[in-house]
Amino acid sequence: MAKYILKRVLRSAITMLIIIVIVFSLLRLMPIEGYFENYDKLSETQINVRLRELGLLDPLPVQLWNYLKQILSGDLGVSNVFRRGVSINEIVAEKIPISLQLGITSLVIALALGLPLGILMARSTRTKWKLWDKFGTIFIVIIQAVPAAAYHILIQFAGSQSSLRLPMLFSQGNLRSYILPIFSLAIGNIAYYAMWLRRYMVDESNKDYIRLARAKGLPSGAISRRHMFRNAMVPLIQYIPNSILFTLMGSLYVESLYSIPGMGGLLVTVIKRQDNTMVVALVLIYAAISILGLLLGDILMAILDPRISFTKKEGSR
Image 1 (cartoon, rainbow, N blue to C red):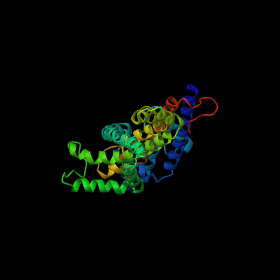
Image 2: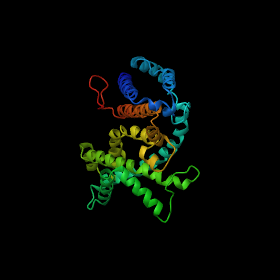
Image 3: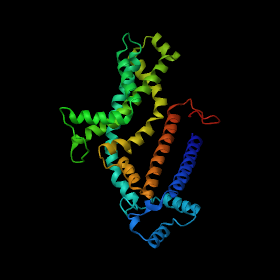
Image 4: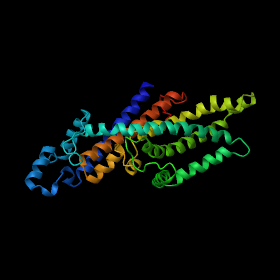
């Protein structure tokens, strides 16, 4: 087990290192305007002095090595345009709590609705009319087929034009303004959890141990709860950490749509402002989140599934 986890950690570290090299090198090829607040008003001498201060006149390998040492010490650098001279760590620390607040709430709702819907769909496949399965399938197909941007706008429009008159834009002091963004963040995960849990539970229902349990006369509810659901959650658990981490860090589109001052909206803003230092830092943060989510998923699956081998052939992916 320890050897398996160590391999996964090393593989994740190498992947992250490759991403850092690629992202850093590509952003260094971008126009230097992204390192200055008032580039057009500066003389060539001022520009060169500033570039030297930032270390941008050094050879690329030297710049990369210095940046690696910097981020390993926990320093993401400072903003050059968005909030000139302010530490990126400080800016991110201000934005994360807002995204966490919305993300945690939306995840609780997604798990509370998505998992029961998946269970009802799986159990409904063995009934005559299959009502829950049909209802859930229609819901999932709509969410999967329609572009997320389209139904996010529809949710915003419908919620603001309904009798509730919910606010179209987010405001920290107005609890009603939380409803539409949270629902927008949750709806995709509701469909995702329901779809995969239904699939895995249906797969489990066709296995011999389930047939044996039915032959022994065990109640269908007990079979679904104690056997099918428990075993179906093993492959699903692999994807939950990744979706959790991304939801907690905020949705790029949802936060921009509702003007939420969180992590997602911050990345969009700094890209528009061409703040190269912040773009690199935020892209690396999201890359680290993705890699961490996959790593946690592999480890959780290995812990929960005793069939995975930790020797020669690894049973994850």
